[in-house]
Length: 142
Length: 76
Image (tube, rainbow over all chains, first blue to last red; front, side, top):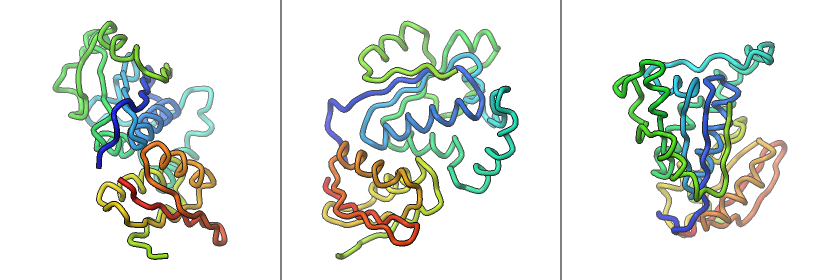
């Protein structure tokens, strides 16, 4: 099964490792890819942490700490898939690309071998901008 | 109506039903009909949007108790 060329494209910059930021980012990117669109996720700053092997996304943003238990319960009960499962499904389409920010890696001392294998490329700002410039939808989630 | 495959995504929230359908459709053949079961109220409109983007056809949506039965014809 293949989809036509000229499908829309979405690019999302992810700059947080919190549950409430990661879920919308991977949900939108994966849903886009399942709809036949191209999708790009660019992980920078604290967002890059989630690309580390075995990194657990387990906290919500500070202002919404009181929802943390409820959120974890819903995820554990399978009402929504885990963020990793959502991402994996996007990767299976072949239309979701994951980019890691090179500057963040050097700032935080993270090496390529520390990252999960789903990462397509380690890129800088100019490369991401040139990839994202023809996107129909651009988001910055932090 | 002949249904070739039933995908049960009841009690899953967005994007669960769509992802379950997307996974099933990768193995399906053109002309087959998939019935998606979902309780997420967003499922009927999400599946219609998805179908119109990728070129499949939603042929019927029924609601039985709290469950939507969404019939999708695999078109490509």
